Amino acid sequence: MATAGRIRSNLSLFSKVIRSDSIASHRSILHPQLSKSFTTASGKEEKVKVPVALFGGSGNYASALFLAAVNANSLEKVETELVELVEASKRAPTFAQFMKDLAVPAETRFKAINEICTQAKLSEITKNFLVVLAENERLRYLDSIAKRFVELTMAHKGEVKVIVTTVIPLPPQEEKELKETLQDILGQGKKVKVEQKIDPSILGGLVVEFGQKVFDMSIKTRARQMERFLREPINFGIV
Picture 1 (cartoon, rainbow, N blue to C red):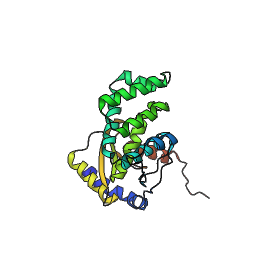
Picture 2 (cartoon, helix red, strand yellow; picture 1 turned 180 degrees about the vertical axis):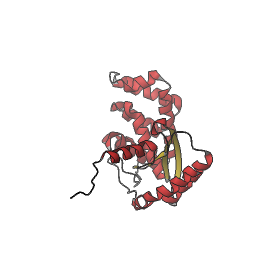
Picture 3 (cartoon, rainbow, N blue to C red; picture 1 turned 90 degrees about the vertical axis):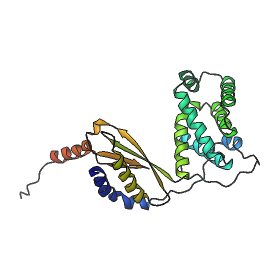
Picture 4 (cartoon, rainbow, N blue to C red; picture 1 turned 180 degrees about the horizontal axis):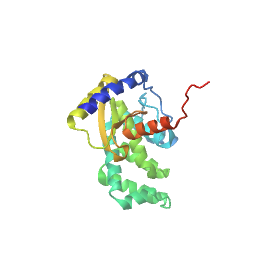
C-alpha cells in the first residue's frame, strides 16, 4: 500500500498535463487499394473517423482496416481474428517465414492466404485485408499493423493501456489502488487496463507508461540523476 500511496501523490504532477490533452479525430489517408477493397455490403461507406491519428505504413493500414471493420459492424470480430492470427503465426515458424519471405511468388502468397482464411473461417473484411497485404508484400508487417489496430480499438472503446514496470509483481491491493489513481486522473469515460512488467534492472520503485507519457520513479533513474548532480562543479560563491 505504501507504493500505491507514493504513486497517488506523485502522479498528481501529471494530472494537469493529461487532462489538457484531447484525442483529436482524424480521417485516415487510405491506401488506394485498401479504399477499393474495403467497402460495406451496400457499397456505401459511412462517414467514420479513426479515434487516434496513426502515422507510417503500419498506421495507415491499421486505420484503413479500422474504418472498414466499423462500417461493416465487425470491429470486435476483426480484432479477435487479427490478434489470434498473429499469435498463431508466432507458434508456426513455417508460416512466419512465409510471411517474411519476399521471394515467394505473389500467386503463391495469394493462394496460401485464401486457403488459410477459408480453413479458419475468417470474416470477409479480415480476408480482404490479408489479401491486400499479400498483394503489396506487406504480410511481414502484420504484427506491427495488428498492434496499431488494437490501439485504435482500445481508443474507440475508451480504454487506456497502462504499463507498470516493477522489480517484483505488485500485490493485488496495490495494483487496485494504482488503477483507481489512474482512473481518477484520466477521468470518466476511460477504462484503465493495467499491464505489469517485471524488470530487475530498475533496482526498485516503478515506471508508469500510458499514451505517450512515461513517469519514471525507479531507483535506477533517481540514482543517475543524483550522480549527475554530484558531478556538477560546486560554486562556493567566492568573488
